[in-house]
Amino acid sequence: MSFRSFAFRRQSLAIAALLAATATVQAQGKLEARYGVTMAGLSVGTADFTLDLARDRYTVAASGRAAGMLSAVVSGEGTVAASGTLRDGRPAPGTFTSRIVREDDKADTAMTIADGTVVKLVAETPKPVADRVAVTEAHRKGVVDPISALLVPMAGASGVIGKDACERTLPVFDGRRRYDLTLTFKRMDKVKAEKGYAGPVAVCAVKFTARAGHRSSSSLVKFLSERDIELALAPVVGARLLVPYRVTVASMFGNLVVEATQFDVTTQTAAK
Image (cartoon, rainbow, N blue to C red; front, side, top):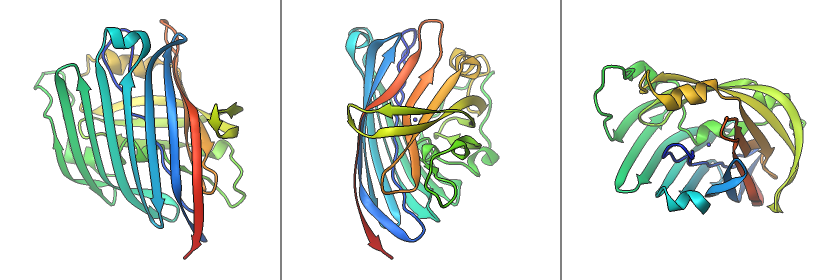
């Protein structure tokens, strides 16, 4: 993931991705990607991100905004940034920040994570309502931020993308809400960006399960929990990592699709 833009509600979803290294060499490079967001085939938004990887650390910045016909009725944009370390080729989140702007409303979040536990959090406090599921200390342990959650290490030593990419549950905490994304393998596809990557992707079915921080009456939570969601993961050349290439959310109003139009990687390697 997160820039979110639905025709029937004001939401934004910032999507980001990043690079990681193999066990024997450390990849250093940059990933630049652009995503188009469509609803029922109509352009409703765009998202951009850049990722820098230097030895055993990563940083990523992403932004998303309403576009096309939607920008005439909804003013919204979001930015996110994350950083952390790489441990055995796996991202270990350190910091996460986000800002969501919808018309005159702003929501800022700053979070520090150590060994999977949120140790510092500055975020807007949700309005107290009777049906909001409380976030406890337990919900802030064993978690990853929304960006790092979508960085999937490649399994095995072959470097071949396969169904193992999808067999996992991602415990996500975004500063306000705790939820799980459970991935299961569906199929293999081939894709070709307008600029950059062309090749295979692993397509995962995604089940969204809200855990805490949400309202039990939330129509958005109900929508996401009941939808067929697909996540297509593409390999990053020069790094043993898979990142989102396409996200599809089925809807009676027409599918919401977030898909890369640019997926450029420049890398160089250095021995440890």
